[in-house]
Length: 239
Length: 103
Image (cartoon, rainbow over all chains, first blue to last red; front, side, top):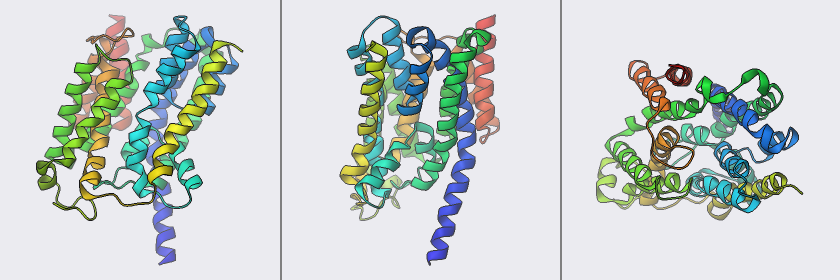
């Protein structure tokens, strides 16, 4: 049994790493544009330290936008925190699949990035943490190196928007979404709900809030319809 | 210390704390069936929210339809033909967006 389990772990790490390569390509493109945009605001060292130790793209862009507009540290911290708030519910979703001590679970939680987390979704509320860790690793390297490249080679790159780099991640998330919606009609309904919530809140709520609110569409899972459509999901279900 | 460094140090601590919170507080415990079904739907909901916000939001928080929408739509068309073209979607999305901006 022990050997079988080691084999399964190795398979998770290998398939996760392979799945992480395309994520890392998208991450690299975005990281270069972060470096280019951050250098005039933060200098050369700070953007690279930020990428290495914060490692959260949307939060870094949000904080950078506030600093670039002269909004000050507190407003920048608030903007970055709002963008990262989604990792709270994402971590709760991951938690039942994690084993070991609280410290070990906290460390696995640090490897959450949107794409790797979504790809590690095994349905029925289960995640494959080893797959997620391995899928995040290439993106970590790409994020730090890409930021450094943007900081030091920004003059060669020019305006990142002219290269369409800001469309790389929504296109990638759309590709992940096209896999998720094949899980059935409830997933499709959750997507429709999330789109409606995000569109409705974007003009009125601070950045970050529409994305967390969009996750509320997942509460469809609590409804009788959600239970009927997905009878195999979860252990100890009462449906 | 500059605003940039204050922001970075604060976000290092806050991001680590947010990412650790769920795993530390409720880790390793199975949750009731309806909660697990909700968790299963979080990935499609989150991804849909990210696509909408990153495609249609301007820098000042308004809904806009610009070159990104064309790029993401082109990526969507590619995915209709080849579902597994993850990298292709990224490249097509960026390239079409750049092309539309250059026009």
